Image (tube, rainbow, N blue to C red; front, side, top):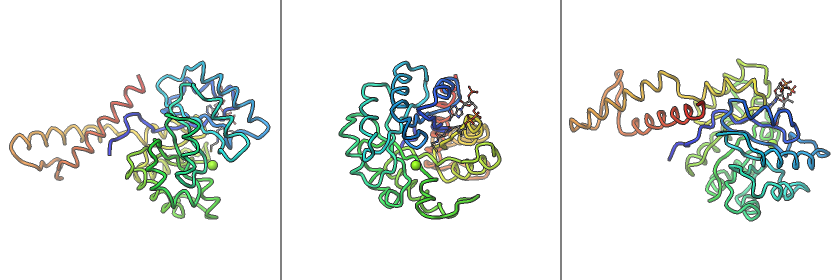
Length: 284
Ligand code: COA
Ligand code: MG
């Protein structure tokens, strides 16, 4: 599996109807943006948001931030108009809500040939079909929709998210098997920094590339937690140096800080450095 070349530590939702927030995002330290036309936009605002967003995207100004647009489902009265309004605009991908099967992606792929597709994983059917969905040739990533998923499961996912772990893991396994990006769900209490930090750390430790966010106040924590720490970067450099030395001496294994370092650790160490480099580019 190739590590993602662009960082996805922070992935900020912005309602497509909120002009001020759309403007503000041009200066926010977010790795990626999800411009939302779906649930963050009320039905009576859908047409306005679609036109506003198309105009904003045509103007640009979002720099190196990855730009994804969450369209309404194609089975709604708005979905097809959303996709049509975005045609030809410079975006990095279309995010489809409530993907149940790969056929849902086929339908979008037909209307948006050549555009990278992303799937919201937020239904019981979708999670059970995660491997087939992840293998879709046009799919670039999963975004976990943990609020919808908890609603469908009828579960109470408090701190630790125990009732959701199986679903999160199934999505991660499928994403890694297919070599696509996998972004964790949102933390609703956007003023609760300690709670957010704990959930970011859990997501990072599970293997997510980053976290979806709903408010700028959440950016700093996600950016910090999902970035390699200075200690991890230092260790990666020392592992690579020690291993190269061992190789030169005809050995397959080095020892760093009392632990063995094999080829597989070097793959991880190089991925850590590549991610750190991608982040440094982003923050220039
Ligand atoms: N993206 C970019 N900017 C945002 C933002 C976001 N998601 N949320 C808030 N801001 C901006 C506001 O425009 C405001 O900017 P200003 O200082 O230039 O006026 C500033 O951040 C402070 O906002 P604040 O007053 O604290 O928030 P709020 O009460 O206006 O809004 C929410 C709170 C939760 C309604 C709002 O953050 C939001 O709509 N989040 C996204 C929700 C969403 O997309 N959900 C769908 C996926 S779950
Ligand atoms: Mg949803």
